[in-house]
Length: 416
Image 1 (tube, rainbow, N blue to C red):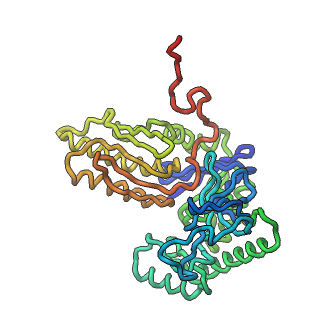
Image 2: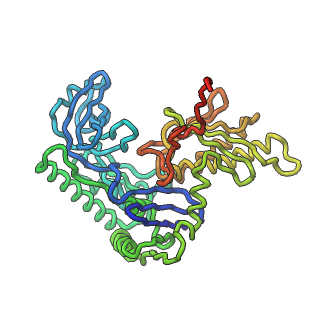
Image 3: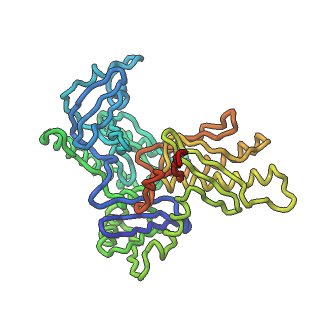
């Protein structure tokens, strides 16, 4: 059972996703400052850089968007040579183009955009120019996979493509067909706007934060949404009736005197889980540090001494197993992306190292964002990556110290 706890305050909406009472996802969105991820723009190519195989596109934001050559090429639509053409053969300055935001702007970098368009729905992801059908790897039964792929091939037209989502495994064909027709209509509207609007212009914005989470995560019959806004509850019920017809929406309005996050223990969890040092259930702890290039996670035994009679190897392995489960949850909760290095406590036996890596991989399967365990380095560090689409989540009322800029250290002049 999952609970979505939604807290509204002024123009800020925060949502925590709980699984069995434990926070696994957290996101915040200012109602006047919605993110760009998934949005479509009609842009204008500002400059083309053959040496970088990339172009910069004006989409009307503070920073120009970055468009890489691989996000321009569509090999399935026309024959492409084995060697990529220069991007200057594909784009020219002043050219108008429809792009979709693939990654949010981060720091001084503009958004990354693509022409590999996709529109997510409840049951599938519609790709108007992809030319292939894919079925979620989480659908394990071969019979379901074959049936859904055949349905996708039957429904698609011309160069259209689909990704059939996990929740479609037992869904009726008519619901999937309706979802496709809705998404196809959205794409046609985007194209019509692109024909009539100047560049740069916003053509389509993805749904709000709460709408996206409900669309992607909500399971009818078991999950529930709890919000402290009556108006929002009514809007959520309407959305659920649309995407889950026939199901009684499980939406409740919280009316207590304390904050909804305090009432459901969310506030306490977030303060603990967003700290640099996070304690493990058995008394060990992990430390999470960020650099420009990667995130480093260090595992320590702390107060954990193992059960009576345990060897050092058993104690270390048990701590590392607890850490693997917690690291996967914290990566998801804090939305940590990019390169990640985990310094587990040294284990002598290869079988134990394999067991710890397998436990981490198993937990990462619960994550909606793609993550890959690459393996152990020669120095005994575990290397993995997680797709980075936006800056790491943080509590909206926490900011880096103006003196140390988040390092926790203050410069002291040797002259004094």
